[in-house]
Image (cartoon, rainbow, N blue to C red):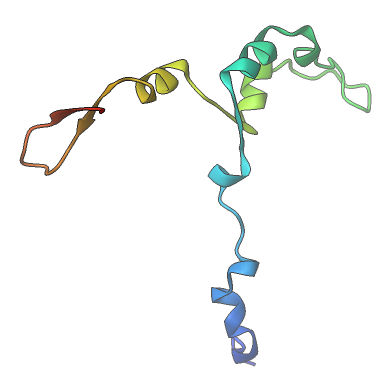
Length: 101
């Protein structure tokens, strides 16, 4: 038997069978909820032993949450709300300032 079967050739290119990217799996957390996740005691509780009674190493809760969520920065939000934005037309030209309306 050969390594690749021609009957299953369509699976390689069919988007239904492609795994999602890690970037698209992670959810976005708004700045309103970021402060709650950082300061709220309910999100910082961790067990010191595993289900078998062995002691486990304490890990930072925020590091664990960053595996599953994208935290938006306030800097990113303030830049998008500014009146002036930089527009790059060509790599050889200098950036020009464009003002809205």
